[in-house]
Length: 489
Ligand SMILES: Nc1ncnc2c1ncn2[C@@H]1O[C@H](COP(=O)(O)OP(=O)(O)OP(=O)(O)O)[C@@H](O)[C@H]1O
Ligand SMILES: [Mg+2]
Image 1 (tube, rainbow, N blue to C red):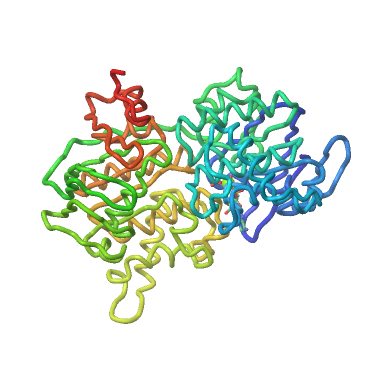
Image 2 (image 1 turned 30 degrees about the vertical axis):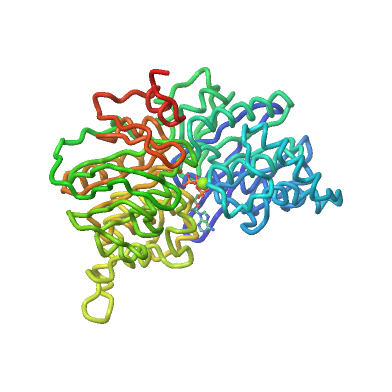
């Protein structure tokens, strides 16, 4: 990629960036939210056309690539925003391109080959399962399988592990190694810097659309990468939280519904309660019951001592429960509306004076969250769709916080969020707890669970398998509970 520049109105997403990728290397691309990573790889895949610059592929020069041209050259990408056909089966999704290439497989063959592919990922899903019934992690695995099928020369992964758990990460790393052995070039975008040290050969850093540096992974450290990325000093990732546990805010007793069973716990004011588990353990499903998005079928759910019977998320919100969803793109916000509109919408009651929305208050609120969460945009009146992936997520978080609920559910709070803003979110969570709110945090990031929670509840296949207090925290113990084993075994 030579001298690539991409301009959007008001932003230079990429400014004269040159990076070369060698055959058979795993090359990571890092940078803060909005640094230009996705824009850069979209220039490679032809999803966007750079304003200027040259693409050189196997010695041949192109001013830009068309998407089908990129595919013909052997460039495959797993995007941050998954592009999938919800109503299609896994097998049909994986072999879609095969069809367009004229090699028609019959249904039985497709399923058989899909199952074989999924095995590489230790994934035993039925290839006939519809995409819409899959978790985000499983959807990502399907995308990777799709790229493998295309026999690509270059595989680009934009935050592939953002939504997957420790166990699945290992599978992904194995796959990356396999691609590398086969001489495939892997371009890997991730905000989890630790993992780069396991799988990458070289790392290139972008900052504010500018190329900073390319370093060999052996010659660098996590701290050095962070310094290149943010260009400022960062404090330790997990801020201290004052212990301030108050009265019981929420109590689940033998709670069942939405595929989870017999869950019991108490959430106190001032507390951050973590939920660990593998993908499919039922953590998000449980949160949906607590929030009113799914029905409780048995047991009790009390908030401030009062039994709740939620028929919809609206009821949950009225009782003071706010959810920051895992799947931010689809549940989180109105992507074609302005950033400030999105942030203000959930708190119409406080913002509207009579019938007319008070736009000054709206502006102030949006401005406050822009600062707090470091939302990178030239203008808060801009549509959310024009933001980078991580910045879109920050808008969703701001939107939920602006509603000012008493109980906050953070489902994967920092998925896709860069190191700098991650710290801001942790500080914010602690502040909220210290103000007397209760926080339920679902996370697949073990460090985050250990660093932020006061207690951790572990789920496995819809059942509660363990509960640990801070002094008992131990990664191995949590993982064995999460796999349904007793730690002693
Ligand atoms: N369609 C668009 N219209 C306007 N601006 C855009 C558009 N797409 C991206 N941008 C801007 O370009 C910049 C780079 O965005 P990009 O998506 O490449 O960032 P990123 O490094 O992938 O960030 P993240 O880690 O959050 O995914 C951002 O400032 C973003 O707001
Ligand atoms: Mg991106």
